[in-house]
Amino acid sequence: MSVMKLEILYEDNHIIAVNKKPGDITQGDKTGDTTLPDIIMDFIKKRDNKPGNVFLGVIHRLDRPTSGVVLFAKTSKGLSRFNQLFREDKVSKVYHALVEQPPVQEENPKLVHYLKKNEEQNKSYVVSKNSPGAREAVLAYRTLKQGTHFTLLEVKLFTGRHHQIRCQLSSIGSSIRGDLKYGAKRSGPKGSIGLHARTISFTHPISGKEVAITAPYPLDIDGAWKVANEK
Image 1: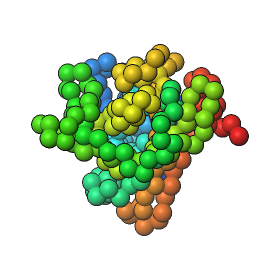
Image 2: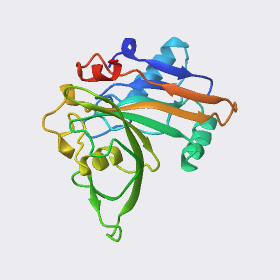
Image 3: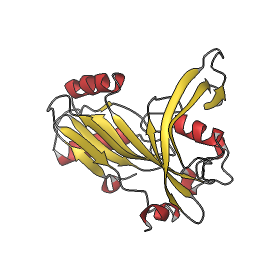
């Protein structure tokens, strides 16, 4: 990913929000690929002509094949304040998902499962409530549009579990487009899946302003997301 392709959605003295593309990584992994924070730091250093190191803190993460808005802190004060905001569940996150099969219920205000992560497989499974290591996972979804090949869902998270949306939607028979790990029939282009962090909103912990950041769909990958813009 080049600096020219970095899509900044919001920036102030303390944070920067970018539209993550599928395939970008928010934290280093075994692949050794360049991370999104590295790209942003390089961009800020060059843009602002900074002589020393650039501070950039990872506030939250998105799975590699997922796209959408992701926040980073430009100051240590911003990092600590936003970490607290996330710990206190004072950040609202809305995702849009393209699923292969529409859910039986067009809308569910409280979909509850208990999930357990398999570290070796890097995958979560739905388990019983009393299963060792089980963690409650809660989300709400509603159907936005029905396309020819995919259905567009709006998903709101109430908990933040590993692969939560991917696992929960798969468990009700609505696997996300391209998500082979959770039951999709075929892979997405360039390893992408049809999950997009659409909007993130919060009361800025330093300025006190209400902030809502929306990320455009990754339409440059393939035509799958065009259903989202159809009337």
